[in-house]
Length: 506
Image: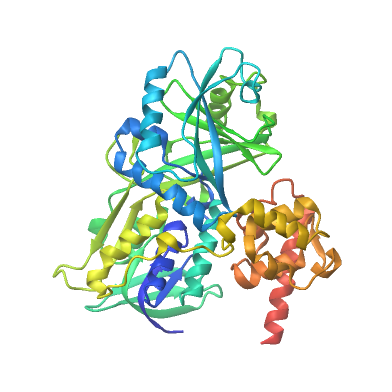
């Protein structure tokens, strides 16, 4: 299979998907390739927050924090089904940062960027309040402020969907095995899902391979530029819900770090994250016993009812592909993004733009800046457009999720309440594509696993590049929590049967 494109994007994480979307919207022909599934690495292993990064103020990362704070409301308007406001509660620890320092930091946080929908910070008392209920009596009060929650993996998929709708070619399970530069284009050899090689050419390449960014630099014959990446592992644990209210906690630690305790999937609390230098295979990253103990010890310094290892029901780890700023402290390594644009020794050869660093909150601005960087060499003068563009499923009147949920309840009253809520939260207005003309659960097909019907699986296979149980259970949804092995096997068998049917129909 051959083809010619304006832009080849290598990497199906949030940065790659965001750049493919932005470029396609500018009228460029785009091919995105991902060696595994969309969001299968770093972009599904985040703390799942759209936030300014309060602690980055201590490292004087004012530009990054300001950009991230601005992006909160842009993204909230673009995808109100998978992004929503979250109140953070910051207990004051007498032995750590003094109150004046916390107030000063929160004042900056409130005023570095304009807010429309998110309230500002305030002092809170824990005496007899829901916020104080799970905490030790040592903590009399603190502060609260606002950021946002995001379903990180779904954000990647929505960007890929929008890119495809604007003409981009999205290929998962497709590895970029080699890149060969010619004067005015790149030749790329791709290895598709069937193992067969495919040859394509592109006028330019974006290397958004995340933890594999230096591998792609070397594949492109630019070995001397393969330095600059620093891998930092971040791990999280999930425990049964530790409190009844819907706020999140941000806990300070004596080593200068912080950890979040966030309501997760109704019945759980997500705790993270760690910052550990990593030198192994990014595809094999996993939490260590030391990290589990670190997170438990940190939150147990605050909780009236301590947590133990037996309370950990799930864990996950990801590798952050950060720009190496030579900082000895992994927690202080910059989360800002850095571009390396290479146009050859003469400065006029086919360009390759490699992406180092970045965070999920600033992915849209990163994509916009990447296209601004490439515009002169591609001869594309299209205007920036994503700031006011809605992502698939987010086209609700006034971006009002609650109003849309109420309408969905009236329309699909026959759906169980929990299932309806999950579908609306995951797919927004695209729920109509899943439900179709169904008027009962029986019309949705077989219940392949608990609360997972064939209608949803068909939608995910046809529209969201899902082709395995893990794609559905851990990235398109989080139904993997509590799913039994035989239920996972039933989903895997369903996909296998669909693949056989598709081949027979060809």
